[in-house]
Length: 331
Length: 80
Image (cartoon, rainbow over all chains, first blue to last red; front, side):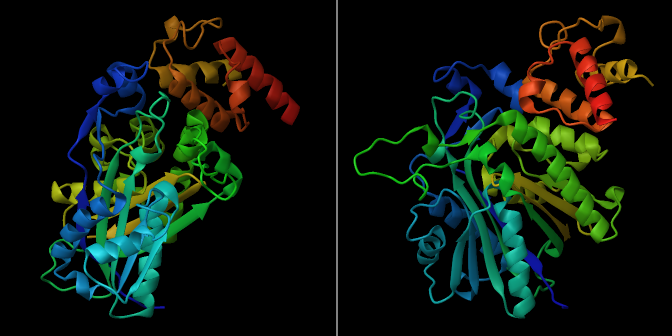
């Protein structure tokens, strides 16, 4: 099927409040040196009462502005998150109301850290069935709402934030540095789900009125195993999407990977034989913002001039489930 | 290249140490300064080099260079 699919607007937003590694030294038995050497993270932005849809709203306004459309011109909203404001209504409906729009199709999707890349696949499907699609894809997480601040192995890893993109079936010369979505490749393996979980409150772990929440209400992770799968899966899906599109690794201008841990990014870069100038890193500033990490990095890379017209950019993500995927965007 | 030589090469590369420092009885963490993610990367490199799987529990028991060499030899033979 022949169709056009452009990313015409980009935006991101993080809460103002910052927690540095030193701030964690007062909470758990850790140190700036320990966190930095094992994760590359120096600080992360933390919600001070802002919700998933609050962050998403700010990121969306930027993306809409760049896309040169009003919220009322949107035909669809896809919200990628596993930390919505509430389970019902979903975060996409809450965002829709904040944007003062209604009577369009909106949905939340949850593929954890892969959420934005999964959303790209849905968005290009929508562009394929409609020549007038204006899809707002926004990935927003208030991960700190599901972080156990007594668990030193996980609490230092995560931050809050949102990244947004407007994806349309049409594009005009007035759009500055729009991207063309070339391809998306998504994968999952449920056999490995136990390695990275937030279980409590799900129907397998139901809530009982008045009962306190346990550790399983928060992110729980087998770090070393996740590390292994993250590196290998992101490498394999990157090779697959490049091969499917007859692209050589050296033709990729910039790789924008999920920002979970500098050691994962470095290991991926080494396997792909990528020079550090061709892999974008901002994990030191934001930590792991799950689904929001790829669109925040993409918007920031573009804003900072790391992406130029004509560049081919590879997005690659990995998350709980396990889910993983890659996308190719030509600017 | 023998298993010993190949393992030495991987350890030198991953931990960024000189091969003079490396003895069979060298402990990855105490003697060679590896952290938990270095160990994971070492295990991954060995799995890929020798086409074997080392599960996380087993990996925690491979404390020295010699222990890794012995494990790889035993499991390559088992597979062969």
